[in-house]
Image 1 (cartoon, one colour):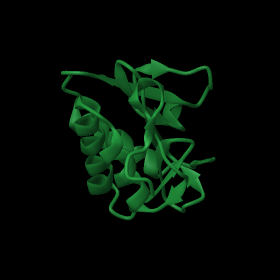
Image 2: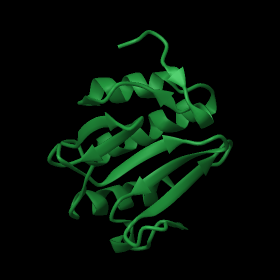
Image 3: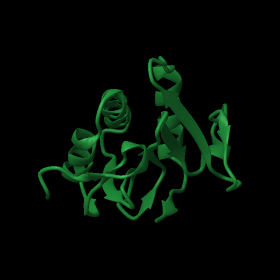
Length: 136
């Protein structure tokens, strides 16, 4: 992998598609500033909550799933926030706060300096890991 990936809009790293933890860690390391710390925390919480989680990077976003073929969550850098997608989020209780144009998808946006509810996040991840994932 390249030493320094190109940063796309919102400081989102452009890296090659890859399976496993290594490309996800490469992606996270390439994120500048405060979003790197948030992304690292998100990745750690997912890994702690679902120890057998499968990881990949596709379309410049880390993906998390159970079978390596379908994905229950992902995240992406935007200029002012980190956007966490729950691909079957409408089935989570309570639903994550940000709706999507896609009926099943819900989002959590984390802004600079914001402290998010880690307990609620881990609960959503636990629930999401037991639901059917999305093929991507």
